[in-house]
Length: 392
Ligand SMILES: C[S@@+](CC[C@H](N)C(=O)[O-])C[C@H]1O[C@@H](n2cnc3c(N)ncnc32)[C@H](O)[C@@H]1O
Image (cartoon, rainbow, N blue to C red; front, top):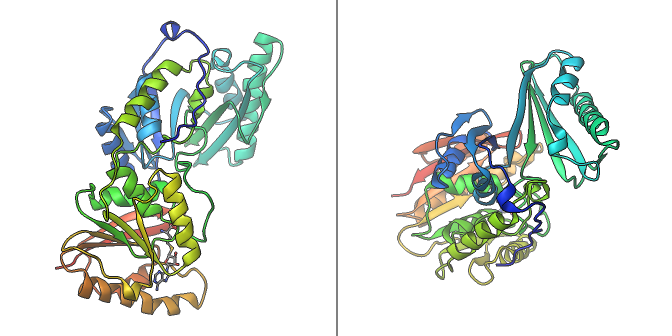
C-alpha cells in the first residue's frame, strides 16, 4: 500500500519528553461505545464514554496509533487546559496562560476551531478570534514576531470548546478530519461518511469470516470500510496527520507504527464483499475508490437493480443504505422501494442477517419485517436508525 506521509524529525527522538496526554476522540453521536471498544483493541484502556466522544489518556505512541487506526473517530484532540470562562477577559487570560512558545514558533501557521454549548458566549467566530489573539500575543511577546493564520492547511490546529462556561483548549492531532481516509476520489450525491459506514460495519459484528453484500452501494463506502476491516488495513495509512507538523513529532516512532500497520495487511478472499447499484456512474466511482483504497480487483461491484439482487451462499450480512427521500413527493415514490427491500430480504436472503440504515422512520415501516434490534446513529444532523433483521 502506498504511503504519503510527511516524515519530519525536528528534534532527536531520545530528547523528546513523552508525558501522558489527556485525549478526546470525537465521534459521530451514537458511536461512542464502538470507539471505546476500538481504543481497547489498540491497548488503550480506561476510556470514558461521553456525549460525542471518548476521553482517554495516551503516550505519544498511543496518540499516533489512535489517529492511524480508529475507524469511527472524526478527530483526536489533546487537551492543553480547562478553565472557567464567563467573559471574553477570562477566555483571553486562560488561553494566554498556556505555554504556546513550546508548541508554535512564529514561522508556523495556526487555525482555531470553536464549538459552543450552553455558555455566555454565543458567537463562535468571536471566541475563535479572541483565542487566536491571546495565542499570537503570547508568542509575539516572547519571540518578537507572531505566527500567521492559515485556515486551510495550518501547521497547528487548535480546538476551543465552551460548555456551560467551562473552556477546554486542545490541539487537534488529526488535522483533516479522520473520515478523509484518502480513497474517495469524487463525491456522488449522498455518500455516507466513512466514519459512519465503519460504525455500521462494526455494529453488525461482521469480521470478514462470512460474505457481506451492499445492494445499494452508491460510491462503495460500506464495502470499502468492510474491506479495510477484513483486510486489517489501518484506515489512516494513506493520509497525513496534524501531529506530523508538531515540534515534538517523533518521525522514527511514526515510521515504526506505519511498518507495523503495513505488515498486518492481508488480501481478501474472492467473493467476500460485493456491492450493487442501479447508478452506473456511482458504481464506476465505487470501483475507483476501492482501487485507490488498495483493493483493486478484490471487491466485486455489479450493475443491478435491487429487484435482481440474489446473494450467493447460505449465510452472510446484507447492509442496505437506501435513499431517505428528503424532498416533498420523493417519499411517496420511495415507499415501493422500501416494500421491495423487505420482500427481497424475506424471500431471497434466508440464512443471512439484514441491516437497513435509514434516516426516514416513516419509510422504514414499509419494510414490513420486524426488526430484532435498532441502533440510533446520526448522519450529520439527521437522526438515523440501523435496523437489524434476522432472515430465517
Ligand atoms: C443513500 S445512497 C447510498 C450511498 C452509499 N452508501 C455511499 O456511501 O455512496 C442510495 C443508493 O441507492 C441506489 N438505488 C436507488 N434505487 C435503487 C434500486 N432500485 N436498485 C439499486 N440501487 C438503487 C442509488 O443509486 C444510490 O446510489
